[in-house]
Length: 237
Image 1 (cartoon, rainbow, N blue to C red):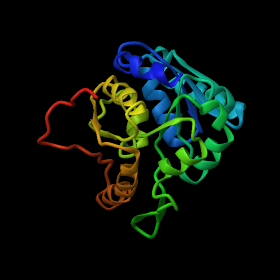
Image 2 (image 1 turned 180 degrees about the horizontal axis):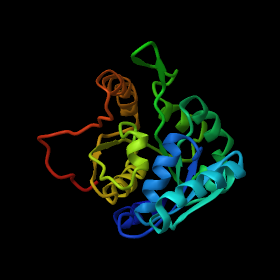
Image 3 (image 1 turned 60 degrees about the vertical axis):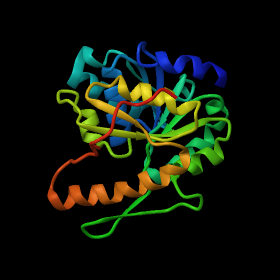
């Protein structure tokens, strides 16, 4: 199945995919599920509690109507059956969730968007895992998956509010099979720009930087995101 992704990566931006969101009822999960559904994908919003998933999907549909027609509720098990999976749980549940569904995730691109963070007063500090990043830990427990780290620096509230355009860049890191798929997926979301930031090892820097960005937002009362100037168009990989 992995071989299929190389051929499909260039067309990921052109056609709707079936995307599962594990841990879809939290802020990050709701945000990414809403934004992907609004971009034309079929999205299964998963949860350990299917009733909770149904409630959240009903709330999103009530707010956005046909703009999220492709959104559906399900269990995490059902979401993990999708062709591409987003791991959107809180950071300290991400690794355990990936491990629990490792068999289903084998052969698939899995997006890790969790940041290991701890709040101390009016600041955030990174929590560095034994292997450097949450994404690296996910790859370790789901070795058959193509883990790609992305969406760390886009505020969840901004993702969820599809009445406003997104402003920012998404740094995407992973291996040469999964990374192009996610780059195309991000580029297909209006007003977001995907940036090729290299191998999965670089997730350490991205996850850690999120602590500084969130501290800026906390102290300056905003929802700032990342925008990089002075670069050219992305070269095909």
